[in-house]
Length: 447
Image 1: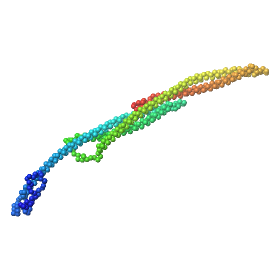
Image 2: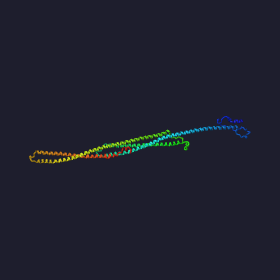
Image 3: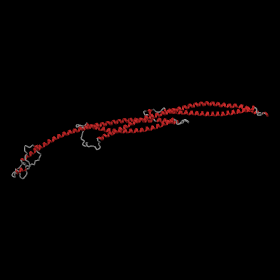
């Protein structure tokens, strides 16, 4: 028995000790397999027991202690598990609620930016439509300048058919040249403005497409976030995505996300304002050019009116002088005829006087006397010759004056014809063509 006591590893625990307070310990039960067993050598062949009674009690107590310790640890673990489950449930609910709230905030942000982009797209679309109308006005105004330019060049070409001395560089020609130059400058300005409008329309459309793409992305993201906001724990559409929590390297930050849209809106607003300014410039250009063309047209018409009045006055004066010249020619013809008749009338007295002197020159001897009759006859012949010389000289002068009057008549008639031709060109050709000059609305591109 002493040897058996030595082999015990632990004394039985007192009955007053609580099992739950004991530390868990693995008990080593002594095996009755040694050389000195309790049965002795005499009973070796009849021994059936493997443990001692104390060992059996000790083993039972060990099982009790182990069961109490395991139950206690299990109770603690169940308590901690319930506490952990409650905490994780609360954490999951808070996290889900916060995620739902943040998704809602994101929806509000996306909706705000989406609304701004949509508004900007609509404004750009409306502005581009207005700018297209202004470009159409420019094209119509450019087409309307073709008629004034053809009128001005046709007037210049028609006035080249004036005859001398009316082929002069008068105020009408100066105003026509100014009109043609003005129309060419306006056409160049309108062409440059049309190119500028086309370029601005292209920029507007590019920015509209950029905003539309951003808007489309935001609509798609908004729909996705809206779908996410409707997910809940009882939803049948949710499933596991183990790798979805991984952040993409190319993902943007809230700052870069907002900055991207702000930059798009800023560029779109800048192009829209540039388009508005260009429309105002186009309207100002069309208004100024149409007014300038009409003012120049009025100046040309006024110059034509003054020139026609000058030509008409000159023609009236030429007609007046022609009538007087014709009357003077008639009077001068009568005068020439009278002078010729006067010369003819002096021939008979001269023949009589010369015949008398000739007959008296044949008087004989002393009868050939220089008497008073002789002197008077000589004086008469001299007087007649002087009268004939004077009449012939006056006849020559009258005939020369008649010839000059005829030349003046022809010159006056030619000048009257030139003035009539100039009046016909200016009135019937030029001013009649200028009656088809475009209106100020047509020149402004409204029709």
